[in-house]
Image (cartoon, rainbow, N blue to C red; front, side, top):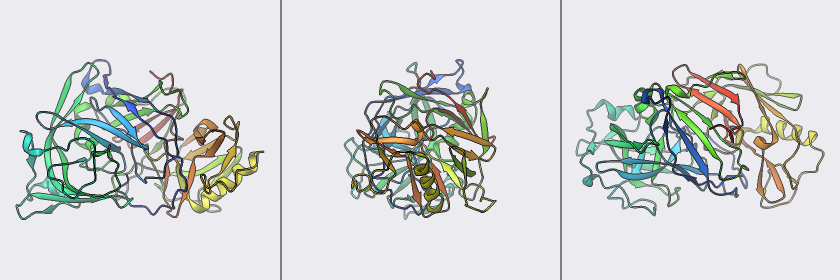
Length: 423
């Protein structure tokens, strides 16, 4: 769920994967907490078609555990807050910074199936006062009549949360079963939360690059603000897990690694990179057509947005070239598929290969990463378009790469990897 506001073109019959993951466990790397942790993500269901949610979701950088599941295309991360610990299942979101959950009282809130957090039952809960610097770390922090810090936080899909900014103990669990309490974590206690969330989502776990994100708050405790991920392709057997590693031990290195700079912008939340163009087979397509220059930071990587989203003119050229190189005729007039480029075939396409040309890094993409099956006998290009000049590198194309995000070195690294065997 991107707090970074972009105007998106509607993704007609978007191919969103319905994912559910079993509890996810961090394992200490080399037995040293400061070296970081790893986690497994286990898919439990097969792909289905859902409308686009316009939310950016991704992984946490650098700590013990949070079981992650995903429901209706949203990755849910399990953490515990308060004393005694209270389990919260929130959307893991690299597109925003604020971690929040629905709290009692919550009279103007969306329905959730799990109990809501009651701050009065936690001995470690404390509201942040207006005069605290923490109140001003969040742009929308305002003073209540009780001199406490209130917030309003809106997202790119028009959903919103309002409530009290507070500090709490967040507890994560290692693979050995050890509980790791992290005291004084800034989070939002939501008392007025708009529709736009489903009843399994108890809030958001903000994992962006801003100062109040969970990554920024806890990264120094685990050897640095960095994480890596290795996602299995979405048609992989559901018993095979993806893997994420956090902290100092998550650095991506070795043969085949290519890296591209993270681009700093006024908005510190999204992980911006520069895409120069795409190749379809041997045909190179420049991001801006005939122009020889591109704006730095014209894409951001988002684990939670399944399709890759390109500016309309660029998207149209990519689609035209794919059509030109695929011998089959595309499906037309299927209301379930809308305007997506789809082919009727029992098995995935043999080609073409695509290459994403980032600044300093060429990332080759096979059909297993670019064509997704929304229903039996159909494979569709997992791309869509936007009226914005800024695109999103979605999670379909991130599979089968070990991708490292080093927020301190300001680099993103890609290493071709069979993520089904990356244990």
